[in-house]
Structure formats: structure tokens, C-alpha cells
Length: 163
Image (cartoon, rainbow, N blue to C red; front, side, top):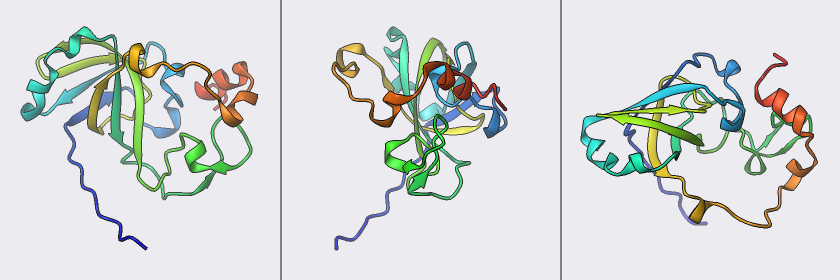
């Protein structure tokens, strides 16, 4: 059996939002329209922001620093059935890494103003990548178990309006 290597990441900044409680965060960015926040990029990484302002959306890759212990079988927010963690976007993962597509509003110095985010205040940011439909859109996608989910129910659960 191959030996697993330890992988170490260092954050490049901190994500700030109005979400202070994990139980109140919309489940996905699509359910958080209008939620505003900002990212404070550490000074040594500011040069990497050059030309980023030409994009409307960003992938944020971040550490789920408040995630609970990893589970391989979980109940996702959209359904009461259990699924393997890799068939969901549940936060309790072997490597607690989150990914969200957010709207880029503006960049001022080392501050990136964003909206439509679903991220806890104080979350460590690992990386930023520009979203582009040229590379990221796919045709004929299969949705797995999500294909059976009622859209209205998804919206209600995703916005946590039933809490």
C-alpha cells in the first residue's frame, strides 16, 4: 500500500462575511444572492491580483476550518437519504476543503469585494481562480441523485428558510 504524504497549505488571505454562525449560512452560493463580503489578501500575494478585475466571477478554494469530524456517509441538505460524502458537497470531509463560485464586485488594493457568497466569516482562503464559461461550462451533464430533487424544496432548504 502506498504511503500517504502530508500536504500543507498556507492561506493567502481571509474571507469575511456577515455569516458568523455555520447554521445560518446559505448552503450554496446559488442560494445566497445578494450576500456581500470581502477577502483580505495578505500583502505578499497582492501582485497575484493583477488582471483579476476583468472577470465577473471567481472560484474561491478555502479551508472549512469549522467543519466537524469527517464522515464517509452523510445526509446532504437537499435530501433525507444518506450518500457517500464524495457524492455530496457536505463539509465533513477527509480534507475539509470548500469551493464556491462568487461574484467579483471590485478590487481595491488588497481587498476583493464579493457577493453571492456562502462562506463563514474568518474562513482561511487557499486559492482564487477565475471562472470562465469557456472552460467551466459543460453540456450533457448528469446530476446523479440531485436530478430527483424538487427545485422549490432545494431553494427553501438551501436558503435555510425552514430553520
